[in-house]
Amino acid sequence: MISRLLVWLLLAAAFGSSAQAGDSPRVVTADGAITEIVYRLGLESLLVGVDTTSGYPEQTESLPKIGYLRALPFEGVLALKPDLLITSEQAAPAENLERLARAGVQVEKLPSARTPEAALERIVTVGGLLGEAEKAEVLASELRSKINRIQQASATRGNPPTVLFILAAGNHSVMLAGEGTSASALLDAVGAVNAVSGIQGYKPANREAILASRPDAIVIAESTPGQFEIGSWPEVERLDAWQSGHRLVADGMLLLGFGPRLPDAMAAVNEVLPAPSNVAANDS
Image (tube, rainbow, N blue to C red; front, side, top):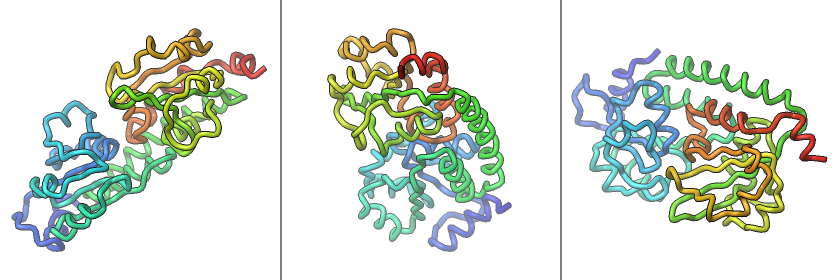
């Protein structure tokens, strides 16, 4: 296993850093799930800054915030004197990332994770970048075992339940999650089906579509606690799934991040799905 010190020395040699031997690499992360991975690996001491999507764990609040993932400022990032920026393919603008690379920052853009396996691969990649590949492999193996147990339990359900997935984002906007989203990918991971068909991406909530969806369960991802106000959405409240308690309101990064808390997200969704007999009754 390559030590963090050796990785840093290699980075320093490659990018002309002025840091002295023995110093730790200065790392910035721009993606909430990637930040969570760093903390879960116990490498948070390397972090000198994070983006605004990085709000978990609470310790991230003490770190400088460099701005939003899709609008990363060149000067704001460079001011932290990072050796390594780990981000995802959603990061923008590309021009600023290219300028950072030319300024001597190692910029690593990781693919988005839309399956449990991809999420685990991203953990291993981050561990390798920070010189802790073995620790990352151990973490990935532990999470894989938890995911497998959840999926095995889901497989006994029989008919896949339908789920209405709602995203309550900033400025009180409420969106329906369609195909090709992390929300739909999470439902796939637990053997559920998106109750809204014919929608790609996230679309503004349509009250008629909500009533027509007739889901077996409802999942609401909030960008901040209390973002979704059920009193403003009587169509959701009237759904049988809401009335019967087959509903989940949870943190959006937990549900959509596909980070190291993915087993927790899958378990939370799985818990509100109806029993097989109830699913069959709704289908009839």
